[in-house]
Image 1 (cartoon, rainbow, N blue to C red):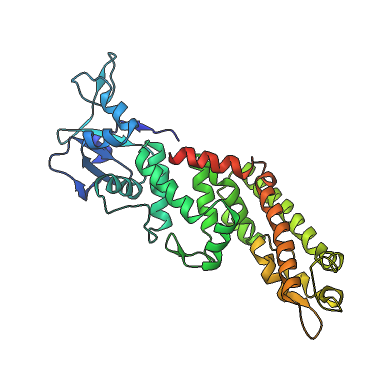
Image 2: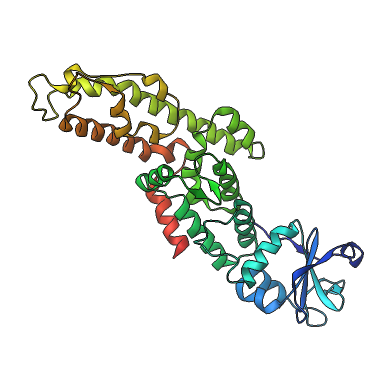
Length: 339
């Protein structure tokens, strides 16, 4: 994300309101946004942001910061005697979140499960744009904790329910918002898990939530969903064969082997769900209709493990459905980002 910083005329900033909190009496630079002004400190911003550091170190006619003048120097714009910098294209509320995170230690911390997705996405976008490395790193760590890249941890989080960015994990549409922001901020390590998470929604929801997504990314999502559905449906279609082909392989001690009198029922209910969690082994054995004695522990364990092994194979292939490298590559890149 490229930062666009320019000078603004005083006539344009005259209708902007100074922020109630982020207006320091000893501030030496005013940041202008679309809706408000912030009087802050060059040193504080330079210490945390390489973009602001480079801006404030740029030579000026009077030794200050500003816009390039007609004679090759910098002619700074002033606001009430303080140098003015306009953050072009940034919303005032978003800049407020970034500055408060930079100034107030308690405003954002990576273990805050109550942070709203609006604040999170604003911080990730602007910390990337202006290269606030430490804030960005904490945001990525929080996302890694909230949306794990390994199957067991991810499914455990989904099964546990609870909140994610102050929303109900299992009913909110947060994957679409997060997919959009990681695409905008080049945090591509989360692309496979977010594409996968988006696939579990009905098509009308997917189309409604991806209206602002570039066509190429939408194509990637829909093609990947089709590949995922096909692989899952293939597994579901083979479940009866998994029963019958392993009648003598489970170590069953009964005279009439459990699997010889067993069958799956209502498998159509789990077709086209695009979520491997719905066909987890222990869930699927509840769909087995067996004899009056039911499945013995050995047969039950065997079938659960057999189904879960097939699920692991599909999980391993998920990144390829979306034209991405494997999970190992993304986990390695994530470790590099966080190191």
